[in-house]
Image 1 (tube, rainbow, N blue to C red):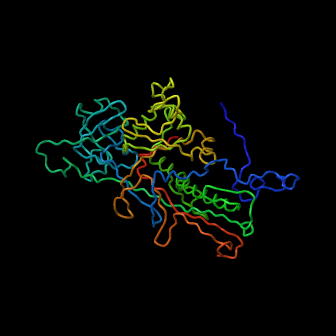
Image 2 (cartoon, one colour):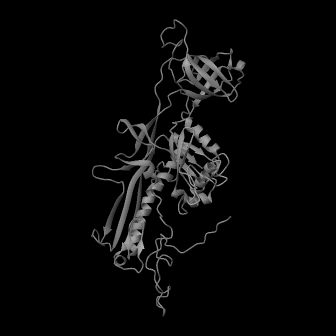
Image 3 (cartoon, rainbow, N blue to C red):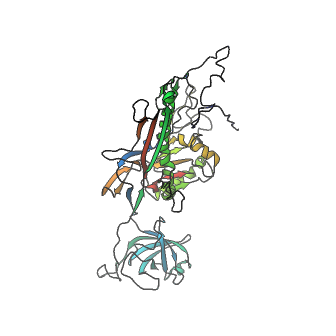
Length: 488
């Protein structure tokens, strides 16, 4: 079934007075013999038009006085790496990177005496680390944890090729313990324990962006009474059009402050926006943070694959590899929300017969509840909520309609807080995984500024107009992005 939407005349946010954004007395026939019956209340045909409120549900706001916010996140506790078998020696392994693909260099923490699991796509062997080399030529080093080759001895065979591994096989290497012979001397020798491991952490930074907007009305228009009573989301109402226009500008700016923290990305080194007259740098928004440091799912059966529990099982498996945070919020578009409802209803053996739909009792006298607000799968709880930003035709809804291949179905955000080291304050702090930082000091707060200039009302200049100015300077901190999932 296809749905065709017809266009209609509507109030437009433009910089000009057009025929479709004001009532023309002459063209509407007010000078005719019979005066039309004027409905003086403006019709609200789009319902609630604002989309802000998402960050208020999942995050917090906090002031900052610096040009950037820097935070550090813990590394993994255990040692696990990706590598390849060297071609010179079937038992020599080159460490390529850590298991999260974060370190592209050669640093690792495997030492002589460690016992490791070596796994290829087809084989797994338990091995003893006999040599830690710098150049795979057998030259031992005493630097500890900064070399990129190890030589292992399988417990079950003489060499890895006897087990079944081959040259250049891709491997995963996991340290699971260590072993030493009786009467072994001290640890700090090449024949025993070589060096020690320092705990690892990764630092992240983000910079706030400055956002501005304004609305202006001339003194003459500010003193003009209209024929239509207007109203808006910001509480403005009355018979003066500029009241609505100023309020709509304020509401739109509040939405922009949230949309920017969701959609923004940092400017690349070769980007044309860097330098020049504009000299803008961008900031890391929510989607950008998840794409670079988190996880993405496009489902297992195509678009709106939330109809299949297999997608959630794959999501659970990915979360198990990371923080394993049990409670998660899902903010999804309408199609995905309905697909989830249908999926959960199909789990009910009585759903096909229409006798029940969910965990409640249905009777012939009650309205049938066809929606689910959450469910539990394995040890994880998922709470579902519609996200207006992904549905509205004037926001992401239109972008998703245009480019379905890159559409955003929703986002999964961990509930609760995380503990990170704040390098500005020099101590560990517990904050929500998402929180907004805005510039502020004892004398100036740029969280959400608005001020009026001109000669209308309070006189601040000789401009025969009232100018309402808006400004904010803020950024989003996405902590523990490895616990987030973007649903494409």
